[in-house]
Image 1 (cartoon, rainbow, N blue to C red):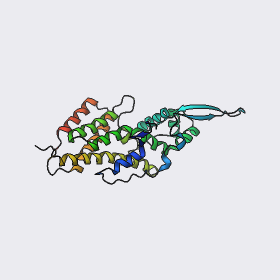
Image 2: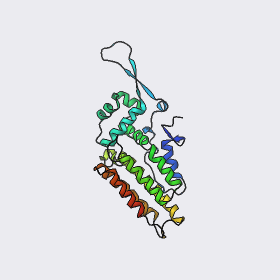
Image 3: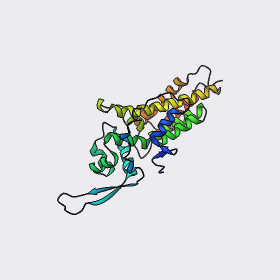
Image 4: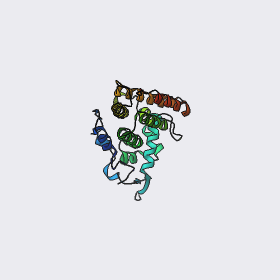
Length: 256
């Protein structure tokens, strides 16, 4: 099993489904759970390199086979969608960044919408791991810092555009592409709902004040997380945003 395409021993899409069905989960319908067309074609799942047949016009010889690295090309697609957003990304932008021609892109990744789905899955490997940890263990302060530090880290990567792919990848789309925006919106809800479960655990453990609403507190912290990504995109230094995280953690409604 190729760990790069799987998380916790199962496919990433199924990992999201299992995460939603764990104890305490609030129901959330992901519109693309049944959108199997967005998955990588089955015969490409365990290949590192994809053979691409190249045939020059007017050349009567047999087409030659050129290979490109699937992971490298997909990482390049993540970067383009991250930097330009779904609507702002053209097929030309993708083929140039990925180093493939249009037929090769369609053959290996599907159309632009299907490629975006694969890019989201690729990006979510790290965030899904953090969310599993948040849901499984840790007090209110620990999970709050873990989630906010994760958003800060993702928003200030030196090799990527500032901001977070989960926010910038498709925050606003044309009506024809609303499903792309909905896919990322559901993943942002996943973060909020995971926090709510952690805060409910902390409330029952006596860590938070009686009467604290886990859902409202999760909404507050997730709002801070989204603000961190926007401010990182505005050029606010990571050191300043780390102070925002410190203030947020210190200001949680702890029981005295």
